[in-house]
Image (cartoon, rainbow, N blue to C red; front, top):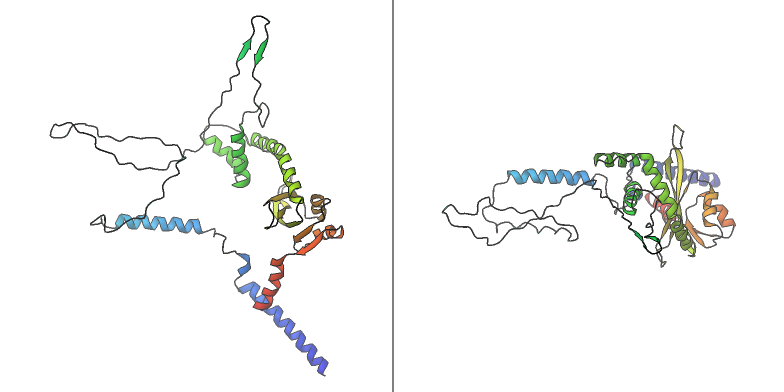
Length: 314
């Protein structure tokens, strides 16, 4: 009888714990999903609405009686490295109404921030030809090295396209439209060729960073899904980007990203190769094969904390 009561008590506690978890997942605030340091997606909209309301209130507010009555906060000066265009505003007439000549005694200066989108400049590389009248030897300076041989983009334009695509998440078809509005017709296929050429040129740097990360004894690893559209396919499928980072106590702060079309564990093994250090990761099965080859498994503290958090809430 006592064993049966203990069994029912254990089952009731288990069911109560599961019900509490389900209630929390469905109704409770999920505090672990949002970091306090992460900005809200609606912050920009809120700031815009506040600025619009303040502008309307400022227009309705009566003029102040004295300038000393209310002091406005000092505006942050614009960066000095930006080029300045001087625009002078002078009276149309240099004579006073009484007939005397006006004398300039000073000036008030205010700065406005302007932006000119899509400003392109053209570099004309002129290589002079020099010849010796005596022996008729022709001498000419060599062609400067370029990222794309015989291509029209400079390193600066290529850097802009790459940063816009990968850092600002601006697809090439949108960049094509932006360039078109500036009066420059660059096909999306051409931009894609530029990006591919840059990837080939940057591969030695990526390999060097890969080797530098593997020189450390402790590496953090994680993977995240991305949607990939295979050429010719009608639907996207899930691919993965694997991140391998040095720990916070390392002299080198570096992260290497490795793309793979699937989540198979062979991608982790191919990246780590002969590395036999300590790997900090979650309990994903794709890392298990590396542990069998000599890599030391270090559990993720965030995942361990989550279990205690669930017990505390339940």
